[in-house]
Length: 117
Image 1 (spheres, rainbow, N blue to C red):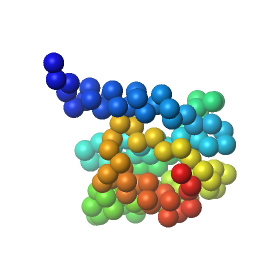
Image 2: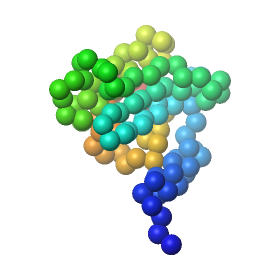
Image 3: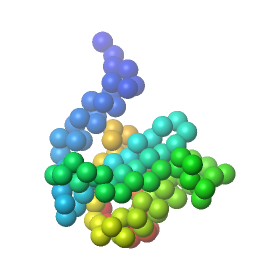
Image 4: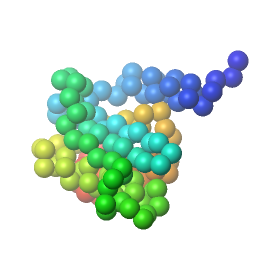
């Protein structure tokens, strides 16, 4: 029986999360991509706490841009907040999405703003 799109992503997500774990020294950068928006957060899995978050939702600097351009803006914003919070290196969790398009743009934007993967 063929898996649906959602079931395939959930299976890939479980496989990724088996290996990707955010520590205090190197927290996890998790990405969520909806049809309209993109969300990212940096999570310390040892404490179960979100350290920093950013999204394109109601983001004035991301308005009027393409979705990929919005992802770059969100990545840069997230990285700037992370550096202020004392986070310099992260583990990237693509959350079952392909490393392509908006997910890749967000990662590149975060790298440009000083975050190390």
